[in-house]
Image (tube, rainbow, N blue to C red; front, side):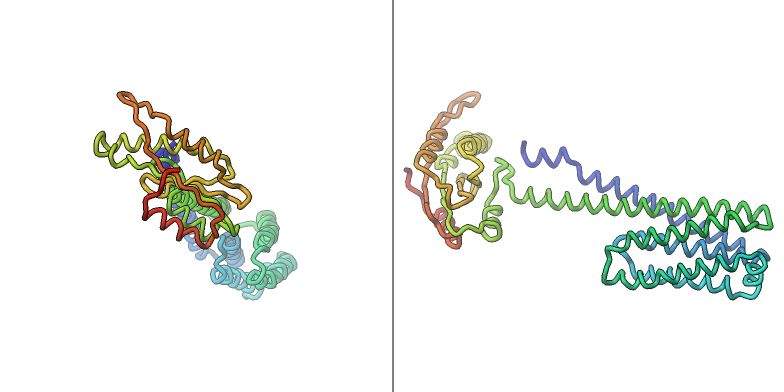
Length: 352
């Protein structure tokens, strides 16, 4: 299968578009949800129940704090801002004149105090995030447990005076659920998009290393392997050049020359084991490189490649024979490989 066909069967651009569309939709839901929460809170600000108003503000900022703790990579400035805002909501509930009287008369002060202490205890973990980012998930779970305790208490204990306010509170809880779900979805989408771009990058690197016609490793791959991946001191090299490709291209057309190169590549590859790497070094030149110093290119292997390439290539209306030259180099020093390859590409080689 050609590289072009592989890319066509893996429409990664379509995947990117789909993920981007879904992400945009989830972001829209998140923004609309936050906007609706703000609207509800503005409606409640006109009510006389100050304690209820501050409780709803606390829930809002707490949920936003949870959202910020979920996001990866973590935005520490926004996380600390959400923490400070939530801290201030606790402080207002406990110290505001009307609110403090309400929660004290309703016997809620002990619970709010305990929740505030649990919340302040999170500060040490937030500081540790700078040096120990792996604790983010555990911190998020801890925050959610505290938040769920508070939500359960509010649902059970707080009685909203107005039926309209009660409906608003119910809608607020639903919107908070949507916000939490959309935040989780955003995290998942972020991971998916990261994976897609990683696959795309890897696929592009693979395509850059492969010859489009034969699917063999190309000159770029060989140069990169010599510089970065080949670690052994000694290597063995076999150069194979097809001499009559220009003549065939001129006489029969480029398509015939391409067919000959493809057939030659397949025949050489069939003669090799996994101990060798095969590269298309230039238009009509192939290189066989041993992967380790212990694996040598023997005369028998060289002869088998020569015999395979000597067989006529049957086309629909004719049979063509390759005119080839083969040159073998043994015990090449790794640092001298590029120089040897340059020499082989500049001067004609003698048939063996």
